[in-house]
Image (cartoon, rainbow, N blue to C red; front, side, top):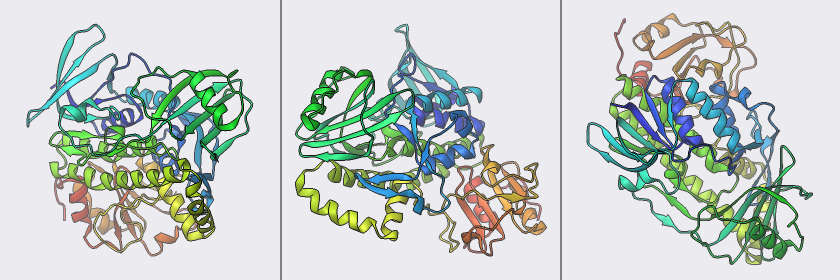
Length: 497
């Protein structure tokens, strides 16, 4: 075997997955068609959920000072995300190029084998292994063998095509422009401005760069590569707004459409899809890159556990069952936002009604949680505890054991990519029941260092998966602790009770 896992694609999803797999001890090779990072910045910033994900791996500091905000939108209608009490603010101005740089550096530090100038031409699942064929930068055909293959290679995924995944949905109906430009003095329009013939958005990025999104209704989609000229953008801008921005200095320019597709399966045998290879949609609210990163965090620890021989192959089926529904809701909300953003005057009555509804706290909370990814809840055991299946909010811990220190938190306890059992009442019998899994699960005995979360009232113990989601809690879970540990971490090494 050349590797335990081959990941195709060195974008944010691929690099996040490579890092997660290495944390779990899997040997990883990443194959990327490009000789170097493109420098493009399609994705911009992080949602609250991605901020939590990066925090639990200790990555946030690598991005430097972040510009954060609670201001967001749904289809151009402003939503105040501060209504989500306790959630971290979203980062607004981190270009995707920086995200890719940080994640690639992290994965490489952990030992991922990253091979650029390797264009995948096909793959075959042989049942006991996967064969990946590629062409390297010298034009030579190479063949690699691995236990598992993950396609994080974008909307036109070769992995998806070569392994026969179904990818139903709708084709693009229009073409839009995305551009980063210097030497422009435009007022910010972060929630967009709907005009008689389209919509424009303006955002300010570090370094004096202005982000433009230009959507001109009636513009048919065109099949083309990277041959987008800034003159097309400035001409469309002038038709829509009457303003001349032709003097701007483009950093990069791209075109995109509103195609909406999702793979019917995220797993076929030894092959998986993640990120844009599994779902494409209108880039509304910056959700695409963030959802893709979270796909990788869900899959990485599970696949590493199977590679190590700790967990059965059936654990991998939960990747599809958990993330496909997240992708389906993503496509639903981005299509809804597209209708609000990109339709004409006929949509104005609906915009007016929705704007009124957003004034109600329950509606604003629902939309903010949907767009930020904070409404995700997995079916872990059907119990009644309010945190079951949800990501554990940051909980400061006092007197934490296992070397965690007095200022540690539930988030910091996840830095190593292992499971965590939080014993909140110093229960020796509970810890004894977890003895058979301590090679995979860290047991942390601590009490909340401050006022406990409302959802923790009466809680004595919590089992966290490596991705930070609550797999078991006492009281409230229907199953006992050993059953939950066995389900998510595999059989015990030796039962000592």
